[in-house]
Picture: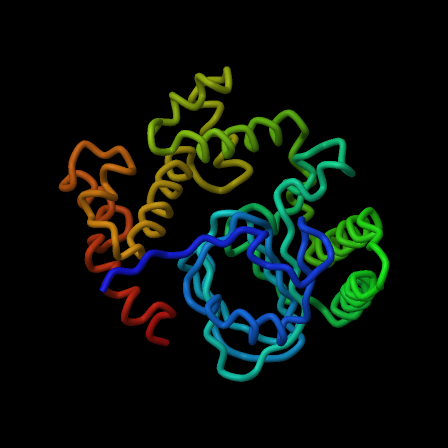
Length: 296
């Protein structure tokens, strides 16, 4: 039986009084949208703060425990699923990619927060008691604004959201990010954006270095110094991630995935995937279908 992984837009949800944002208590949302427990993608930003519940969740094929005081953030395009052992609750917010456009002069402002990096290990955080209490107050204020009979003050909601992001960022103490000087930070961000736009066409660090007007050695040194990995690995990881996202689409054959990722032929794609993942695309697909959250 074929299965296509669904992609949901912000317009699919209408519980809040603004087209660009949805705010909900998580228990209610989870019951109303039970189909979201299985693997799906969003075209919008999404985050959840759990106040109760246990189980597992997966973000881009990385598995995490669900527990109280855990908050996770997701950027558009990531694959996500939940599997709860006990009834969850908390708060959920979805917002569109253009939601802050009328408020923020710098549209890349959200990039400063590591939990919007698109890297699952940076997106899932367990908060201390003080921070949990602080953001619970913010969530309640946002919910209260949406419960008013008159039109909500959208700028107030945006400011409250930014306050929440800053509170979480401060509590997780990502001081290392603050040490990167603005020039290097801009190069790295531009490199990551270029990978996102070109990973199916450009595979070599020197190709990206040329677009950034720096040498391949300089690019590789920046990646190793500040991200702890090589430029080449960042490119390969993005290709592998998209391969995994496509492989859980059962309507796509491996040869079609190879074509979508611009490989010369299926055998080259299979060798590439096996070299960096330690398994073949077919075996990955079968294992995901039988044990998506692992065997532990």
